Amino acid sequence: MLVGSDRVAIRQSRILILQMPAAPSPHHVVRNNGGQIGTVSFSSDNERLYSGDTLGNVTMISTRTLRPLAAWPAHTDSILAVREADQEIITSVDTVFALGLF
Image (cartoon, rainbow, N blue to C red; front, side):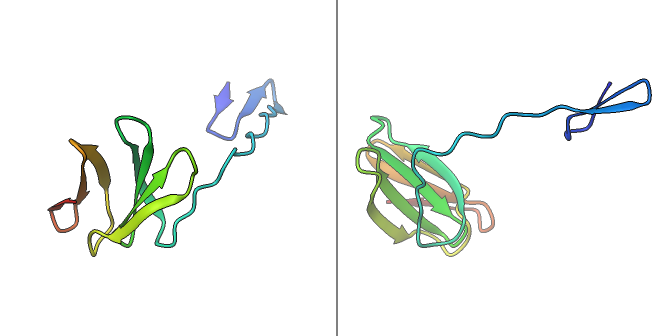
């Protein structure tokens, strides 16, 4: 019988701990200067990665260089979604029911 998410198996009054392999190291860590990243999305051509953070900032990152191309304050609240549509960037903030088009 498997108990919870801690991967402990109980069999006939004995506890067996199942060892899980360690997570692999990341190839690259993308950082931003704002708050915690709450949402990410890729452009339709996979050339850009968009991130929205808890302070309302949007960052556009090149997937080739992994460096920021642009960053701007899009809202005053946490960004819940950021998407690219027809070469425009759409953001949403649920706390104030606002949409932004950049």
